Image (cartoon, rainbow, N blue to C red; front, side):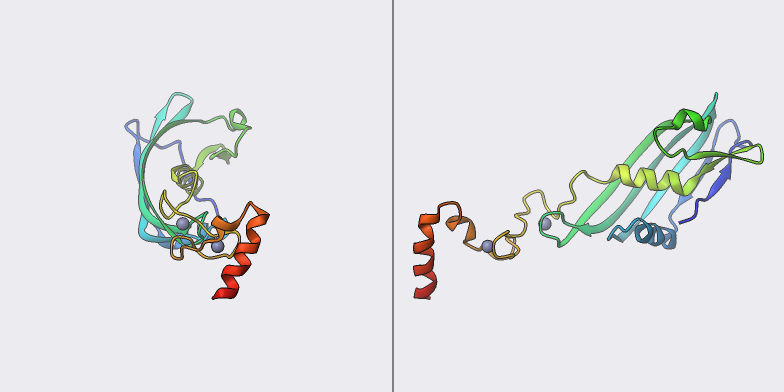
Length: 174
Ligand SMILES: [Zn+2]
Ligand SMILES: [Zn+2]
């Protein structure tokens, strides 16, 4: 995914609004960052860039509903994104050595990477754990069944090897 640079030198003092909701760019981002994700309600990011001293103040919102893979059961997990963000981005790229800067200088003009900014906010809006539900029971490590759908009895027979005799009896009696 290519960066999309916007020049900062001509920002009006009250700031400038941007709206980002290009579904093709989202699809390309998901693909490029190898994220199995599709939008149920396309992700919209609206933000304002306001010049402030030796940086730019960025505030906005990110909204949408996406489908990701549940970390426990690998089925669809619906994630509703609704985040507000608000931060200061210094114009000196050197100050940002710890992370990839959103700002570069090109031909004496400072520019901000709009797509980089949007992607950063998207990643920060994701929950730490992607789950289809907070009570997702996941996949049984023994039989591989989705425990949300099939109530396997593996967990009852693990742990104590002496029970394996009973387990075998149970299987043969079926
Ligand atoms: Zn799940
Ligand atoms: Zn099982």
